[in-house]
Image (tube, rainbow, N blue to C red; front, side, top):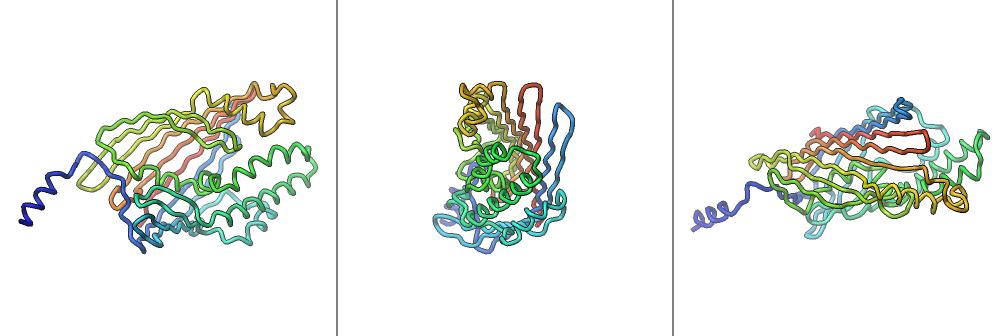
Length: 307
């Protein structure tokens, strides 16, 4: 009877699909190497390039029937862009920012950050220190600088801002959980990018392609593309007018010549059982056009499972 039941179950297993459902237990620990590279080009000329590389640890602290509690530790920095401004470094020293706690649902999809308030306080203190440093040099219009900085501070110190900007690799860890993907699948759908200035989200056209599926090794490779739609540029301009009314002018035309475009090219290699990334490569190009100045920012995120 046992052999018959086993044969019946085996016959129903779909070997053409990758089910992204987390199979984690309290105490499970995985170590990664994370690299973040940011390059800025103005009119096609490289003007700035920073690299930050560190070890991180993903540890399952608790597992229930409804969710998981994860501790994500940043570990020791291997390489940083260079020394911080002393005022900013001093502002950050009083905060323990080497780990973040968050929860996922029972499938492994992200739910919420738990200790994000500590990061929020640190970000606000760091921005305040940066503001004092810049204004102290007497080279900028104080009122205008504070007006321009305020929405950025609010965005980076919110829970969503910390998740999307400060520990942005986590969103790539948990993107696919709760669904299954078949060999050769191509999914096209409408999505959105969060608006760092607090306005409406930017509309996005997305495409997900299953590049490789090895069911015997529980391994899958996915390609994922996101491009902001042309309507997103108008959302961007409307957001600027709302965030900076003093700069926009009475008729709001000061931002008419500006446009924004965002494009993502993502490559994911996952062990969907037990649910852990083997390697992630994320490239984002953000193009800001203002009059005769075109600024392109290329952000590259590399995550590799070490042990």
